[in-house]
Image (tube, rainbow, N blue to C red):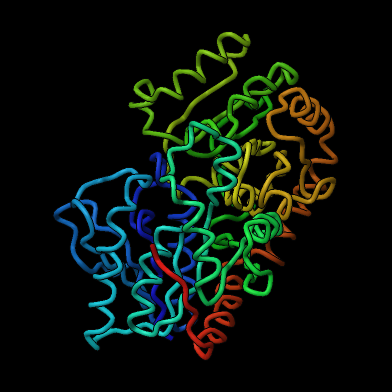
Length: 405
C-alpha cells in the first residue's frame, strides 16, 4: 500500500531532547521504517520548520519525509501550530489530487495532524486512521491552568474520534479515556508501540560507572510531568545509589535550562547533590550503553500516554520501577519485569527502589523476564503487521462524516 503518515510537529528527522521532540518522533520514525520493510511505500508529512529544508528527503528505502509548507519556515511551539493546520490540509489535498502519489490510507499522529489529514481525506476519498499519542483531557486533568493547549483541543479530539475511520489506542488506559470522551469502543483498535530490537539488546558495551555504587537511570525530556523531582526526593531512601538523568539540551547548555536548574537546587536541598548527575542529550545510538549500565530504570511520570523508554530499558535487560500510569500499566508487569508505585509519591518510590536494590536475585529474574517480554510482544515488525490489518480494513470502509471546525 501507499501509506501517508501525518506528523505535523514530530519529524522523524529531528534531533531528540527538545521541549517538543521525544517519543512521538521515535514512534513515527520506527513505524515508517517497519512499514517500509514490509513493502509499503511510506511518506511522512511533517511541517517545514527551516527554510533550507528540502521538500522531499529519503529517510531510507521505501520511506520518504515530505516537508509541508504550512506557517513560517521556522520552529514554532506545537501548542501554537493550530492556525496552520487548514493550510497543511489544503496542501495535502492538492498533493494527493495531482495524481502523482495518492495514498491508500492516511495515518495521523497527534490531534492537529488528524485535523489536517481528515480535511484532505474528505476531499480525496483517502481513509484516515488516528493515533493521539496524548489526550487533552488527561493533560488538562494533570496540568490545570498550566496547560498551554489550544482551548478547543478536547472538542477537536472528540470530533476526530467520531469522524476518522479508525482510532488506534496504544494501551488499555487510553481506551478507557477515549470511551469516557464518548468515542465508540467499536471504533478503537489497540496497537502498542514497539522497540527496535536490533539496537536495544542486553548484549553489548555499557557506559562507564563507579563499580562501587548502584545506578538508577532516568530518561526523558526535562519537563515537570516526567516526575524526575520525585526520583530525586526518593534518592534519600537509597543512600548507596546514584541517579543519572539523560535528556534535555546538550550538556553544555544544561545550565541555561530552567528545569535542570530547579532539579539541581532540589538535589542540594535534599542533600543528594553528589549523587544526582544530569548528562543532557544523548545520541539515540548511545542509549543502549546507558541502559545496560543501570541497575534499574526509574520511570516516574505523573501521566504517560505510552512510554517508550521502559520498553527500551527492558529490551536491554534493565528492570523498571515506574509509576502506575498510562502505558506503563500495560508494559511493566509488577513482580515480573519490574515494580509499579503510585505517581507523585517519593516515599513509596524510595521504598520500592530500596527493596529491589537490596535483592540482586530478584533484579536478575526481572531482567530475564523483561527481555523475554519485549522479544515476544513488542517488536516494530509486530506493530506494523497489526496496523497493516487495520489499513487493509479501512480501505474498504465507507468514509465517515463530521464537521471540521
